[in-house]
Image (cartoon, rainbow, N blue to C red; front, top):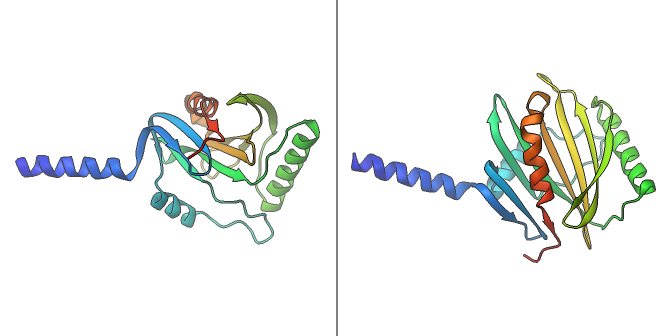
Amino acid sequence: MRRFAVLLLFLAYSFAAICAWGGEWTSPKGFTLTFPDGWKALTDDQLNKVLAAQKPPADNAPKPPPPEIILVGPAQGNFTSQMNVTLIPQAIAFNAMIEGQILGQFKAAVFTAGTKIGEVKTGHMDVDKRHAFSMAYEQEAPDDPVRCWKVYVPGAKQTYLVTCVAKKAQWETVFPDFKKIIREMRVDVKP
């Protein structure tokens, strides 16, 4: 019995060392995310496995930069809600013209990739005392449509693109977590 207890303790410790459950994650590239219990930040090794398993974009589609972090929520069925942060290597000062250009480029990339999406709704929110631009839309998926929410948070020298994805049927459950994580995001922090 004692061996079994020691083994369980070792496994629990090992699992905790592999991934961070609920807590705070700070990027060496200048941002911090605080996430609730039930969510985890993938380690570098886990992140590399996820990125390697993703279907590469079509030859003519723009290749997005890899995310700095992927947060995954509690599994619901065969799909896990997720959020990732990608860095755009320039600070974007958002206004109606820039937002229109971003929306146009996004729609062109979606068309080039052959992805089917619904109406794109744009909006704004404050993140770390900054005026962020957002886009929300539904995207076709094999089993059930997914909802996506992209939030562009301007920084001093770069822009932080936060992308949230969940099955349409799960959206109302996970949206409060997405919103809270983004609202509590801190940018331009020193690592």
